[in-house]
Each structure stands twice: as C-alpha cells, then as structure tokens.
Image (cartoon, rainbow, N blue to C red):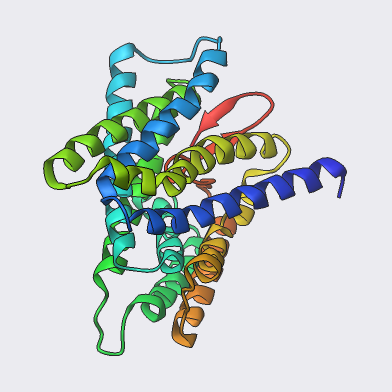
Length: 309
C-alpha cells in the first residue's frame, strides 16, 4: 500500500466522520430552531461554500441545452429538499445514530429504482437488501410491532435520496458537478425558507443559539467534507471509497453516544450490524456504485474528469 493510498483512505475516513457527526449537529440544532429553518440556513451556507468551486471552473460543461440542465437542477433541488426535510423532521423524534443507519439504506434502494431504467440487480444487491431489511426490523420495530414516527420519516427520506442519485446520474454529463451542487443547494435553501416562514416561529436569538450546529452542518458537512472527498477520490477506486464512506453510519452512532449520550439497546446494535453488513455487501456487489450524498449529492472524482453520479 503506497503513501497515496494511505492518504486517500485517511481523508475518506475523515469525510465519513464529518458526515456522521453531522447527524449530531442536526439533532442539536433542533433544540433551538425548527427543521426547515435549520435546513434553510445550512444549505445557504452550503451554497456559499460551493461558490469558489464554481468560479474556479473555467471549462465549458457538456450539455444538451440550457433548459434541460435547468430543469434537471430544479428536479434535483426538489428531491433534495424532500429528502433533507423528511430526514430533518425525523431526527426530531429519533436518535442521531439510528437516523444515520436508516439514511444509509439509500445505497441499497438506488439499484432497485434503477430497474425502471433497465439496470441489472446483482446477487450482492439482493443479499444486501435482505440483510438491511432484517437490520431495519431490529433497529426500528418495537416488540409491539410499531415503527416510531421519527424512524419512519427518515426511512421515507432514504427513497428521495436514492431517487436524487438517479437524477444526478442523468444530469452529470450535461452540467459541471460544482454548478449542479450549488444550484440544488440554493433551491433547497429557498424552499426551506418559504416553509419555515409559513409554519415555524423563531427569533433571532434562536438562530444564534443554534449557530454552532448550523455552521457545522453548512460548512463542515458540505464545504470541507466535499473538498476532502474530491481530493481523496483522485487515487481511490469508487467501490473502495464507498465502503469507507459507509462508515458514516457508525460515526453517527459514535457521535450520538459521545455528544448526546444516546444509548442503543442490544436489539438496536444487532440491527445496526445487519444493516452495515447489508450496505457493504450491496456496495461491493452493485453494478451501479454511488459514493455518497453531500447530506445531499454523491461525487466521484478522477484525474481525467469530474462527474456526479
């Protein structure tokens, strides 16, 4: 193993840790502001964080036309808004650790949505899906066979994250990745602001109290982690990178325990083990290999070209 590989693995592990602890920041922010205001400000910061990447990109993107690209970015932004909103509301009623694992199910859902686009589902996908379903049962279903409200909302968000991956896969060849990211973040921020002003009540002091979680979610989770991932994946194969980034869910549990004193029962730990195993098997066995959403998008970088998948 050469020094470049070691460096890439370390940066990917650091990226997974930043994203995992972002679930803790999202949970903490809910103590002061509503979920839509939190997302509105967080994605506004994310938009600002992507601006330098857009300004630095001078090459002309390949695209079929301006309108298809704009419509695609709008669709990506709407699905990202729906996914992030369901997740953020769900985190109010569940733990950061459980939210991290349940959100990770999008990795398994992606290939199954791909059936509608004539993508093949491999044995690894089926095996991973079965293991993840068993894990989800142990993690979320109580002895009374009731799924908690927060767990269910986060579970629904995973389907929107998965659909978002397919939208990005279609859009990536048309528009440069940093522009897609900035536009969709801006759309999420605008939509979240509208909903926040319509249904949430807040004061300026509440925003100041939630400043640290918001800054972490907007700058660290988006700006810093995105940059680290792009640098790391110059020398890391997509599947290898995806496996390391899957540890995000583990860091979400670790962060919930260290920062929020969240505890998992033996039943929940067993569920996490099944789900993590299922996600890893699905990663390795999938022909459609996404890396990870930037609590929203999934980027893969190679020295030859940038692409969003």
